Length: 257
Image (cartoon, rainbow, N blue to C red):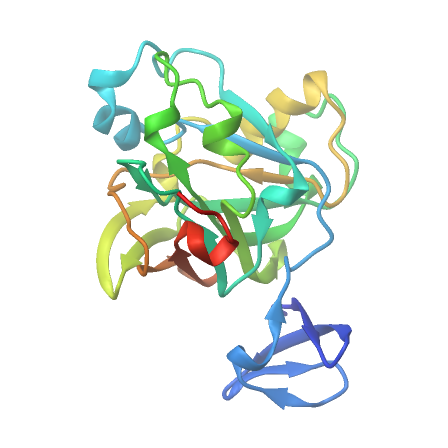
């Protein structure tokens, strides 16, 4: 069953989907906007993939000096970069190109060390949706994500639901899409990953131990466009969830130009 973690009335609660919004474990039914949505599970290490969709690599071909034959492009993110569903993300004044990235997030369920691809899926607890913003102005020449691009406070939105692996028959057969102000701007399919989930777990677990609660952000398909202050961005993955986020200005964070 899908579950979420929310804050309400001074406490953190487990919640489940309900036709009127969500239902807390104690039985109370609430609207989505009555609670503060947290990440749907206790986060461990956040491991993110770049350039892991063939169509996105093609979309950025003029900017790249890497190829799909290279090792996976992997980077880590700190806990301060993560927001929950319905959170707000700051768009810094003066940047020219800030874009969303709709991604399938894979949640590790048990320790994985030197796991072969054939056994990798047994280490997956479940899935959620991620929107991992990037500011292209700050990208390095080789399209290697640096801290200003990929570890920004509140730049990674995760949720709203944790979906157990048993409820997702094939995570490589899911449609992803992003809507900006209600208009579809990005659409893709998890079958187009360059490195699939078992390959990523094998690769990562060869040199680092994956623990329960670690999350792998598996990359985004083509279709990234600039977004602006006031835009409502929704990332959807069929069967996993619908993740909403709003962009706000520096002034909302007390930052003056």
